[in-house]
Every structure is written in structure tokens, then in C-alpha cells.
Amino acid sequence: MSAKYDGLSLLRRMRRNRASSSVRSLVRENRLSKGNLVQPLFVRGGGGGPDPVESMPGVLRHTLGSLTEECRGLEGRGITAVALFPSIEASKKDPLGTHATSRDNILFKAIRAVKSACPSLLLITDVALDPYTSHGHDGLLNDKGDVDNDSTVVALRKLALAQAQAGADVVAPSDMMDGRVRAIRECLDGEGLSQTSILAYAAKYASGYYGPFRDAVKSGAHAAPLDKRTYQMDPSNVREALLEVKLDEEEGADMVMVKPAGPYLDVIRAVRETTLLPLAAYQVSGEYAQIHAAARLGWLDYATTRDESLLAIKRAGADMIFTYFASEVADSLPQ
Ligand code: PBG
Image 1 (cartoon, rainbow, N blue to C red):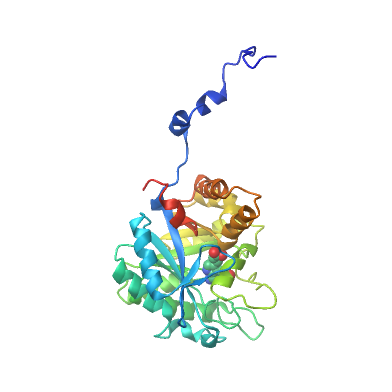
Image 2 (cartoon, rainbow, N blue to C red):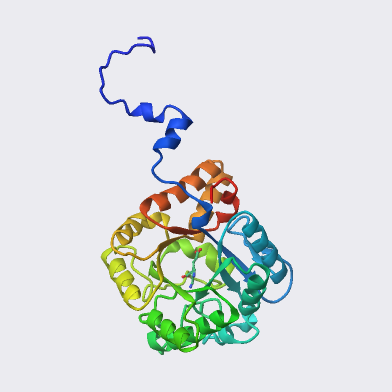
């Protein structure tokens, strides 16, 4: 049978709308733009040069100098927001994470340096104790070895205030303690910082995909992977995510997040349909690492899977995407 054979009388041929890049562009339902992307960045204390994170190709633990240079470059490429995470020397960690609010925490220096180099770049900081605790948990442990909710909230409130005072535009509690959004909001308002926003990591799952991040902030140098299941969510649950979002909304969150992103697209969709707040999704370190690893083995095409992974998160309903790919995809995207 020849390829010209046109024997089927089909009223609807779906392929007509896919026949050229011009028509594909016209009928495209979802698009990424660089204005929706947030670039996570790491800054290191303790001297030495920028230090590559082995499990995250292309990602560095920056010095203050390389961090501000990177931020200028991002701004030049049209990225409008960054999320900053510190990597703290082991010698400064203790069970209470006291270095978190010490005046010489590298994070505060980094916040000031970035805000003075790039005043209009939106700066988001992470409110959790894991970079500072010797055990690597996000909060303070009780005598059973579990993270104690209420004393942790007190410590987090202090950390969020210090970040806001240093110049952070958005504080983002990623710890999953109950009641921390309200505590932080009241504290910021009481200190005259009513303009500082709160992005709540509302539905954050106890995920295996955080491995490379723990490597980056050196919070995972432990014999076994850290078990955070008494505070982060069970990967089986969706309804619970909606309740978490509702509570954070009632406590005063300005934006909410689902994390990880790719393995939780159904949760992103469900949250999108129940909240009126802006919704962020975090394409986490393990999602980034797995694309790099498979591409390195020649098993996946790097750029195709990278772009598809981001588009899928957008299509699921995220308004903004935290992604380690932000910088490299920016040039090919509209504002
Ligand atoms: C910790 C925190 C984590 C990430 C962001 N903040 C790791 C964790 O909860 O163990 C993960 C980000 C990533 O994997 O890219 N407060």
C-alpha cells in the first residue's frame, strides 16, 4: 500500500494541529517563562573557593564573591528570584543548631551581599535548622530523639527574623513544624517587618529525592539516610496536603509550596484546585541529579527531558518552579 493512500474518511485528524512548528505554537496550552523560575543557590562558610557539589553537576557551593557574580549573571538573563541555602562547616554545628542565629552565620553575610549587588532580585531564604544541627534534623530533638515541635518553632522564629532583618524578601519555612507560619508572621509584624513575605513549604514530603541536597549542605553525612517521617509528609497522602495548605493559608502564608515536584504532580494539581494563593513547586536535587545521571550514561536526551520535566510541573498547575535548571534554561525562554 502506498504512503499516499487516503482511504480513511476521518472527520477529525488530530495530526493537522501538529503538522508544523507554527501550528504547534498556536495550539500550545502551557508555556514556561523565566519569570516563573526560582534558582536555588548554595553559599559556603569556612573559606576556600567555589566548591562543586558532586551529585549535582554544574551546581556550586559559592563563596560570597562567586555568589554575587552568579546573581548578577542570573539577573542579566532575566531570572527574577533566587533561593539561598548555606553550607556550614562541621565545626560550627551542634545539636541545637545555635550557629543559625549567630552574627557570623555566612547566610546573613550572603543576604546582605546579594541585596546590595542586586537589589531587585527577589531573595528567598530557607527557614529550617538542618544546615546547622550536628544530627542533620530540621529542629531540636527531645529526649526520645524526635524533633520537638514547639521549641523548634521558637528557634525558627528567631532565624526567620534574623533573615528578614538581614534583607531577605521572602522567608520560606521548610521544616514542617505545626504552627510555625503564624509564629513567624506575628514575630515579623511585631518587629516592623510586615512587608516580608512568607512562602510556606506546606506540603513537603519525606522524600528520597533530597539526597544530593543533603550532600550540598552537608547535612547528610550520616551512616543511614535521615528519617524525617515524623514531620515531613507520607508520600501516600494527598488529602493531608490540602489540609496542610489550608492551615498555612489560615496562619498567614503568602504563597504555598508542594515539594518534590515531578513525583507529586497530582498533589500540585489538587492544591492548585483548592487554594487561591500562588503555588510554588520545588523540582528538588534528586530530580535534577537523575536527569543528569541518565543523560551522562547516554540513556536519556538531556535537554529534552530537562525541558519536559519543567513543563510537566507547569502543566500540573504550579505558578512558580524552584529548579536547579533555572539559569541554563533562561536564555531559551520568554520573560
Ligand atoms: C531542609 C531542606 C531540604 C531541601 C530544602 N530544604 C532537605 C530536607 O528536607 O532534608 C531539599 C531541596 C532539594 O533536595 O533540592 N530544610
